[in-house]
Amino acid sequence: MIIYQNTKGGFIDDVRNGNIADKIEKEFANHNLFHSNDSEYRAWANSLMFMRNALDDNDISDDCRLAIEYQIPLTAKRVDFLIAGKDEYDSNNIVVIELKQWENCSSTQRPDVVKAFTGGAERAVAHPSYQAYSYAKIIENFNEDVYKEKIKLKPCAYLHNFKEENRSNIVNDLYKEAIDLAPIFLAKDVVKLRNFIKTFIKRKDNCDLLMKIENGRLRPAKALQDSLASMLNGNKEFYLIDEQKVAYETVKKLVEKSLKDVNKINGENKKYTIIIEGGPGTGKSVVAIQLLCDLIQKGYSVNYVTKNAAPRNVYFEKLKQNNYKLSYIKNLFKGSGSYIAVPNNYFDCLIADEAHRLNAKSGMYQNLGENQIKEIIHASKVSVFLIDEKQVVTTSDIGSIDLIKHYAEQEGSSVYTGEEINLVSQFRCNGSDGYLAFLDNLLSIRQTANTTFDMDYDIRLFNDPNKMREALKEKNDINNKSRMLAGYCYNWITKNNPKSDEYDIELENNFKAKWNFGNTSTWAIDETSFPEVGCIHTSQGLEFDYCGVIIGKDLRFENGSVITDYTKRAKTDTSLKGIKTTKNYQLADKIIRNTYRTLLSRGQKGCYIYCEDKALLKYMAKMLNKEIID
Image (cartoon, rainbow, N blue to C red; front, top):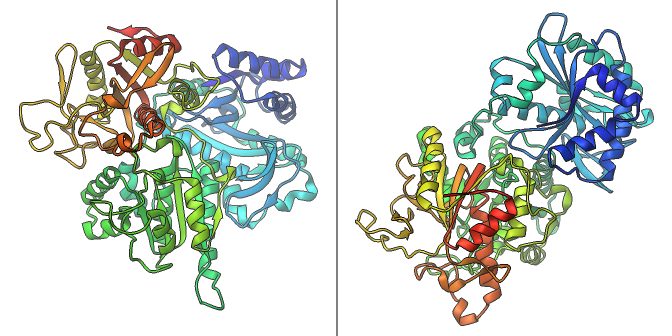
């Protein structure tokens, strides 16, 4: 989505007339979008004056088109500036420019990471050259037209306020690779920037390149499980952006540091614990798997750890299809109860994904070990916990930031956490931060400003569960990446006989379906599993193109509020085990809301919803300003 576009000549006129910031802000309103704060408005007024100067050259045709604030499809990230055209060899090019108002920054010991004052504080952020390059690569990966028509993206960064005496802080050998891929231009480099642009843009293109960026066909989004084998072979499949890159480089640096830091008295390595927070779709698993693959390549002893068997089983199956031995795979991907008796610092690094799902005890009867968090920290020199406390979905889930800090202190492990490594970039729900804010508001998880959101994300409300299933099947027929999900309100009748004529879920209009859990461990990717319905346990940690969610009677709209009712959960559901005894109804309420938040955020491109409670369906339709499909 492009917010502002114009010819070069029109843009220069808007800047000269002092209209550019107002026009961009108006276009945000026209798209029913909101930019983050007043500082963005000031940045447009300031930075775009410098861009006008850089483009004010007769060798760049006035009818070349440019764009400002382009939101990359399927993400929440925006590119500052694009200019499109042809070079002297008649090639189609688009120059991608990352703009910064920094006057200075400081180097770090982490590749592609600098420290700068941004967002009201001094923090570690991606180097502007890396940022520009990663954005360009994501556009290439998502846009079929850019890829097939070989439109060349030329990234660079322009720091128009950056003082010359501080150049060595941002242009040095640590950042050479990124700068080679995306040159950086500082305050005194306007002529160099102009010459860079002129190398690729001289006259208008004849195929409207910006419209190919704006309306190009989207390539199928990469699924982590489909890319895993290639990543283990050392190939680049995902480009980490912004805070993902900072978190990734932070972990790598601390692993290196731990191996060098040995206590002279007891001979033990220094221990580090890193806590990375991130909501649905922010790339927690991508960061975790990228770390696993890269640390393996460097010869470190490392495991990917998750309590949830569903993603592990999918990874096992995908890797077996690529000729990896099962014994090798199972040594890399471990359940969270695998470290009960492991000696101190046995592993260089343990990466605990979905850390909110960790349990206290291990084993089938949860009677083994002391605490999974403590055992993971004890067993590794560097322990990494990727966590979203709003995805706690059973009474046995004990993973929390406070508890991780508690056991890290007990084990003598230094804790790294904080905003700069928290993941916020949205790669699911079509990059719609607004949709996730809407869910939090709907489910009363937190009050947000978003009671509605822009409709780039395909959300549909159905009065008939059969119609929802039919619409979802059309999507699944394309690539087998759509699934039905449901809250756990339906007894698992077919558990011991999945091939029986009985059904677990029976709804109005003769809708019938079975739970999937008993007959396959790879339901999320099986070619024949679409008719079956997944639950929280078989979908958490995975994602789909589209999901269809059945909201049961445990979530209703009554007396002007969305309420939960734990008594409507299935008798076979163990998620709320012990609630009747402890009478911890607040925890039950939290688990039900978290469950639906997780289910409703599994879809990358869309979510189709059916509610047993018609009042809730009507309330959602009102909040979304959408029609209910009968």
